[in-house]
Length: 342
Image 1 (cartoon, helix red, strand yellow):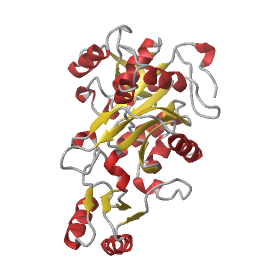
Image 2 (cartoon, rainbow, N blue to C red):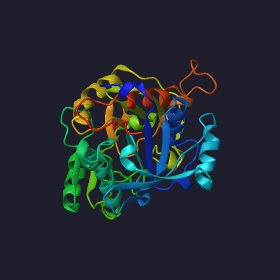
Image 3 (cartoon, rainbow, N blue to C red):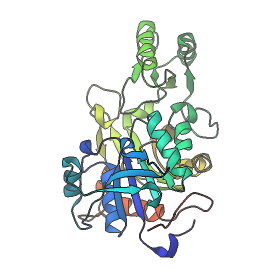
Image 4 (spheres, rainbow, N blue to C red):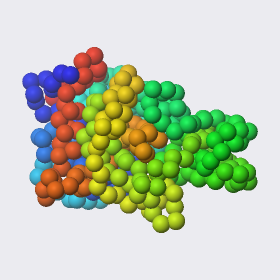
C-alpha cells in the first residue's frame, strides 16, 4: 500500500444510482460521513452527471457537502432534497471513485472504466466488478467452502442437479440482490422447480443458480464486511416469519454475532481471488461456515455491523466506516490514483 501524497486530504467521490433515494442507514451514507469526519472532500454523482466536454475532458456535475460536522441524517436529508452545493468539475481531480450503485448498467460501467482510464482509483475496480458480481464467479472457486452449485440456462440441467441432490434446492438468478426471484424448492416438487427456474431465468442476465440448501440456514446467515483481506465486522440475519430468505428486504432481522475462526479462514481463502480482480470491499454471506454469496458491486452491512458490535460500542461510534475510509486512503501500488490535482 502507499499512503496519500503528502498525507493531504483526498477527494472521494461516490457514484450512486439516485441520491434522492438514500437513507441514513445505507453504507454509502456511513462512508461519506466518515470521509468528511476525516477531513476529505466528498462528491456525490450519478452516471448521468458525467459528460465529455468539447475539449475532450471528462466532466461531472457533483453534489459537494460543505459542512464536515453535519450529522449523517442531515447530510442525507440535504442530498435527497437536492440542497447540497453543486459544482461542475473535472473528474480526474477526484482521487477515489467509489462504486455505490445497483444495478450496474452498461453506461455506469462505461463511465467507471473511463474514470479509471484517466487516472482515478476506482473501488471496486469496474472490470473486476463486472466479473465477480455474478454468482457464477463464486461457483468457479473450488478452494472456497460453499454449497454444491450449478449455474446454467438449462432447465433439464437444474432438474438433474435437484434429482442428484435429493434434498431441497435454492434457485436464484445469477445476477440479482435483495432476495428477488429466489425460491426454495423441496425435493420431488417438479412443477415448483420449473416455476422457480422460469422466475429466476427472467431476472438478471438469464443465467440461473441452483444451489444446495444448507440446514444451518435455520440459524441465520452472516453478513461479513470484508476489506483488503480483513473482516472489519459483521452481523447475523435471521429470516422473517414464513420466509426462508434472510434478506432484510424480505423481512429478515439483524442481530449481533461473533466472528469466528471459520470466518477468518474464509477471508484468507477469498483474498487472492478478490485482490487479483481489484476488489477491495466486499460483503460475504456465510451460512454454517460456507460462502453462499460474495457481494462486490455495492456491498452493504456497515450500519448493522456497527450498531450490533456489542458492549464495546459507544454512542456515535462508527468505527467500521472510519476503518474503511482509512484503508481507502492507502492506495495499492500499481493502481490508478491518487492524481493529487487540486
